[in-house]
Structure formats: C-alpha cells, structure tokens
Length: 241
Figure: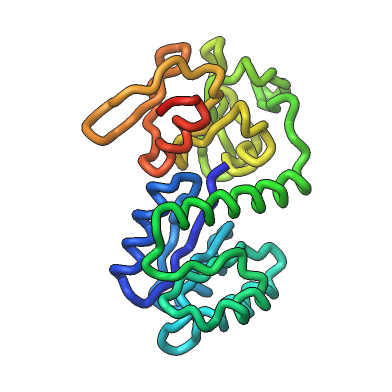
C-alpha cells in the first residue's frame, strides 16, 4: 500500500528535505506541495490525499487552522504536524493529529511515523473494502474472474486498469489502480510505481536497469521500473537487503 501525501510548509528547503526523507522511508508518494494553507486547501479540493504533513507557523492561516478544516471533510486525510516548535503538541491532538514531528526530523523518527500511518490507513481501508479473491476483468464483453496467480501485473489507465496475464493477454479492469491496490491482498500485490501493481509471486528478479534505477523482472521477461521511493519497501517485502 502506498499513501498519497501533501506537504505544506512555507519554506521550500523544508519541503524538499521532508520529501527526500519520505522517499527514503518508502510507502509514501508525495504528489503535492503547498507553500500556504490556502494553496493546500485548493489542492486538496482536487486530489484525495491519504496524509497531509503540515507545518504550524505559516503566513496567513496556520497549520492548526488547516487541520481544523480537514477534520470536517467526509474522507479526511491523516494529519502529521512537522514543526520546529514543541509548544503545540497538546493542541495538535485535539484535532486528531496522527503524529507531531519536531524539526529536524531524524530518519528513524520519520520511518516510525510512516509505519504508523500505513498501519492506520490499512485498517481503515480494509474495514470498508472487501478483499478480492478473484480479479474481475473484461474480454470481448464477457466478465472473467482471474485467480491471483494468473495475474502478472496491472497498469493504470485513468479510472481503469489493464491487467496482464500469465497467458500473455491484456484485459481491461473497470477498477482504478488505487481500487485494485486497496482490494487485492497486500501480501501478494505490491505497487512498485504509480502506474504498476505487480504480483510478487511472479517476480523472478530485482535488478539494476540504469544508474540509480531499479526494476523487477517478471516470469514472462517483462521488466518494470520501481519508483525510487518504493525500492526499499519492495526489498523488505521480498526479504532482500
């Protein structure tokens, strides 16, 4: 499972440092950055985020103001405060913040925060999502139900997905990549990239495909690039160092 994150901080270096730390931690895909609360709220009206990392002291509205607004949303993201000030910790938890990180954030502390977020968000998603025992796809107007082992990987295509099978077929799924990721067992399927969800049972090698770039080779010879931020988590899933 990969969490979609928004970073809100009025200082660009602080945003860049947190983005780098999250990439190293794995499990989080930073898909938005904002320099103000107003900008963040505008972004959040167009994208559904799983977690928002908020600085507290910012011009105009504060991170605490943003957190109060977020608590009113029907599908609200988790909130993590990242600040240089330790005098708002108690107030932070009155708005249901998941964590309160003090700058500079150590790699170990950030990793613990990410693991907490993954555990919490996983519980929420599984509670409202029925795990798919089969993968529904369409072939010439007919709905087929594929066993997990028949699937090599899925590829995102807007609100739909393409499912590639061990038999060499490319079949359409009416579910988005995000929906497939949420509904398929995390012990079997792993999101290696924003565009690709792979069947770990079909991975035969993890290999360098270019300097500082990693790929997975599947049973049919297909090689898919692994996003840098996902490399560490993938190796952990596969028991690699």
